Length: 391
Ligand SMILES: *Cc1c(COP(=O)(O)O)cnc(C)c1O
Image (cartoon, rainbow, N blue to C red):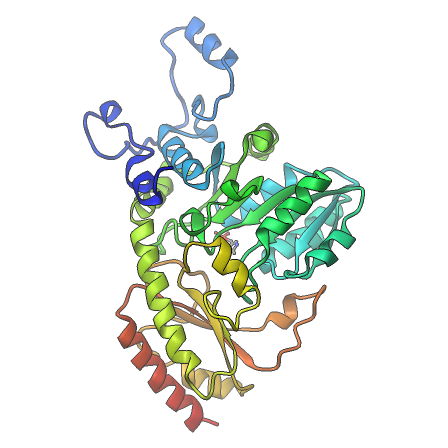
């Protein structure tokens, strides 16, 4: 099996088609011309292979390059790019369900995913049930005859529970239910989802795959059994991405394994330091035992990325601002996966229904970027002094 670093550097390239250039050309375009009518008829009648191009909306050679690279990394059959991570999620789910079906969604899912289920899916007669992230027996008990999808997100991007993916995959296979996993945190480098039996993986490529906070994108990767319905749903919904944005993501992916190694190492260093602090009561980092599902991370993931959370004592908004506002290296903002560090307060209470969030401490989510981790620690140390002084 090829190593992720070698796939990232060598897949999705066809130098002879680009005059010897290392990278594929950025094809801007809507219309592909054919030399004659017979050639056009032949192209339209030929099988819909994942590599085929024919009209700009359906993709260009630039988008195909990134799609084939990501499908190979994830161990999937083929991939399609979407304009955002959220559109990858909604398109994947819509391709698997019809009116009267039931979806089981993990309670720790990214909030806009929940919103889509509770409003859009509901309007079309599709019910969503939420399941506690770590309770596989409970999940089994919630399966109904009309359950078509079990949706996973591991670890949860606010609360970091790591699900027992092999157990959920086995259950879904037994019941012939499709598994869709939001694999944004780990990327295919740290967890190749299809090799673990997931049917469809989705990513916010906006995060680590792009890696430079300069573009939005999503990707859907499927096994061969789910490819045809996914492609139909994708095409009918009119999903399409531009080659410029694709080239930025492709450039990001070339260095993904190297970047992730640094995000992961620096993240663990900062987390270790936080874990020693008296103010910090709970560290939610999958590589630490205090994180629910840590053992599942240890047995299924080959490493950690740079996103995790820690707790501070319940505090006032003024104390939070005293901690966060003057931080030198941590920006205050959503998203993550870029080269820069970020810090935000999070409140999981608002987003839980199956398993209410009862913890009273104030969670802070950090994204550890590519800065020197010792400087990040110094920055946080001064921030915690300000936090104490503002009490
Ligand atoms: C950001 C994010 C998304 C959505 O991605 P966008 O590109 O912002 O639409 C989906 N899932 C997770 C886990 C995310 O963090």
